[in-house]
Length: 82
Image 1: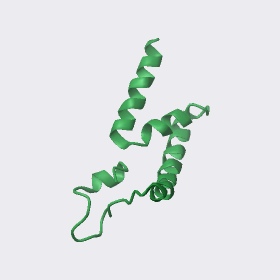
Image 2 (image 1 turned 180 degrees about the vertical axis):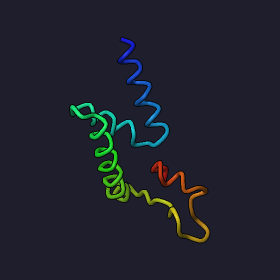
Image 3 (image 1 turned 60 degrees about the horizontal axis):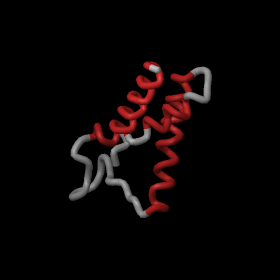
């Protein structure tokens, strides 16, 4: 029971921090090498989000370029908080 609660708390924290981390963590549960699977699924979900988001009318703010509209910190780009 504690293990399930800890996993749920971790998934919620990753989702709150990076928006995609919780999804990547759940995908990683399907594999034996979970750390490697988490890293690979996080990269795959991040790339997929770049392609899927415009279909729903979402456009990301530029991370490093842009005059008036840009991220306040490059840290937001690293965490996929676009």
